[in-house]
Image (cartoon, rainbow, N blue to C red; front, side, top):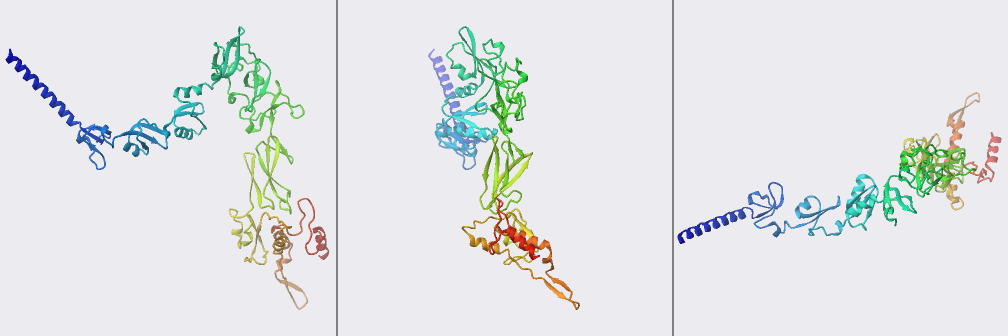
Length: 509
């Protein structure tokens, strides 16, 4: 009996030793912490032959928790605004992230809030919220006062509008409001009906259809009002008895006249501020037509100016000089039609700025810009003079001013600058004097006493004289001009009016 027990004990001991050998062998086979394995995994316990042997990657015969290169932390992606917990440092850096030794991402960059984008919500970091907004091209509302994802999602659904029905005095009362405000009503039996109007007959409320309309703060459109004073759908006279139209919410895009201003319409209240109309009280003296129902109409915001109609938001150019925009004392203006009024915005005085205007799809846009005339007189060729990318100049052939390097013509401003002559009279006189030139015509006389022009004969032509006058007037407020209020100027030398000067020229001829 003892012998058998001894044999059993020895056998049992051999089994234990054999098991320990197996455990020891298994331990030896997985005792290395590979920073990266040959299969592409990071920070795994594996046999040495499965570790990447390339220089720079760690491999230590211990558990990964005990190594520095496999210490877990937080990886923050600065571009996407995402945070990854329990991420090895090397993996984070390879992905372009910023690593922190906080394995649970308890860092400021990873603080979460409620990101409201359009009608969607996400519980993310502020950087991630901005990234999502850029992807979808929407504005964001980031709220840090919401601390859980459930609250964040609920904040979106709580703003949905509909009929809030509750019992009071044994009758079903109704308020058209948001789901959030409906939940705050003290009545314990308040129920919210998303997308329905209080005048919906199926709800059995005291609210009914009416012919009343109203304007709503922050909205362009005219809206129906039910008997309880609740806002209904956009005013449409053809829907006055339509049960469906009075039963559920219709979007503005589903209402009458969408895409048009509907200015002055008797039947449709789908006004659009950007298209030139908005909800206003009807006025018998101002409005051409009265609405079929209610006391409001889409007010026309266009403007009348100089016999022409301009739409709300249009801008255009005007000048004190009328058709001649560069008379002495004149300046350019940018005019704007805004809420049925013409607003005047002057460009810089002395014509240092000019007004430019363009029209796209029948809509006029204007702007003041710098008058680039300063280097006109330095140009010696027609090509450089007419380079509109660099200057506002024009070339006049045949007239050569003293002090210029050209022998074929003169480069002058298209829009002549004005003079502050009472402060800089000397400069004005000097500039205007540069427009004085001589053209000596030579004749030859034959044996019979007949004279024939042989040199500078073009100076005898009317065109040369007209070109000279144009050069003179383009230099600035020079020459025989009438100012922008119709007052004749004076010749500085002889103190005669421009009208008298012209009469003297006729007498000399």
